[in-house]
Length: 453
Image 1: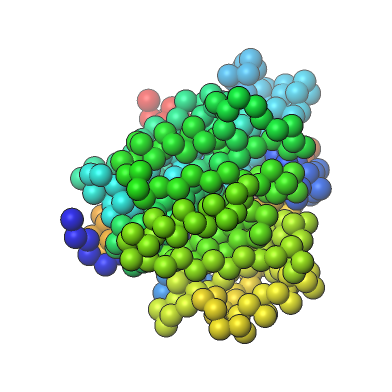
Image 2: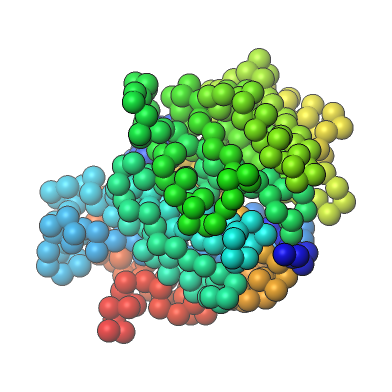
């Protein structure tokens, strides 16, 4: 099967109106270190929009994914709270504030966890396949897949070009954290590539090492997604995260490695069997006429601690029209001497990474997510791009409209005590209702669907 020219589109998550620091993600050091701090939802949303617009201006296909409805009164109802919405919020705040915090999480902003996506050049039926992540390892994220599936189906609605799979069952053995643990290597985007799935644990192994932090992605989940997406065994590689990296705060592979086309940029402690991973990737890519280019950062240059605290690898590795790669990093990389020294030497060294682009994503970083967390990559042919919903592509008009929307609906200060305020729920629903109309996506949220019913 031949495929027309394709591009890699980035779909960034809009930060939600309840952006807060509840420290809900055990094993995410930034999240834990900023617990109970006062957040600024308006600044967080604006920071994300600036990055999206800048990349669109550079010529990249840049889309938008809307946030989830929060507070999630539905989640609290499933946990035994009853009565009117305002009563439920007050009741949860008094009796189980940790559950209220989970119901107010704005973590859907990190759309690298939204789903796993396989392009049409790789799948058996020649369609783009989506599987929403079940995110079952964390209560505050475990219900996201329902709305995520509706959002993806609304944007990619042509069933002849796009296939949507339900999230895997929320069993521990099928713990799926989405594209944060998936990378695609290829030559040109329109040619068949190699899917690289990284997992933290094999739940069917006879023994598991006792570790400091839990591993989230399972081998069984990654294997199931590869089967659902119709990926052939000769173009799939499964690799295990290094346990030491997980214990250093690498809760997803995209905190320790990033890849694009034929380039893999990673730390020397990224994988349990680093040499074996390289060998298998090289062999399977070579069969497709592609030579893998590995940039391995030694611990002597950048420690695991510095890698995690700077989010060096939670960067976007973007192909440049003029050749080579552009690395999009958070400003925290500039602020850590060893990391910035390494990056400057990297771009001066004549390798595939030719350019650095730095963004202020402080509000997201304080909650444990950098540039790569904020985006879901979707490889699309021109025909597939034309078949997507047109209202989600970033341009001058949408950028202006979304900033005005944020300024109108978002608070510039949010404390944990504010989560119990019923007016926050009203504000959030008003904002999301306006957003779904602005983007033209229809009724995505439970409150809209219940009202229509």
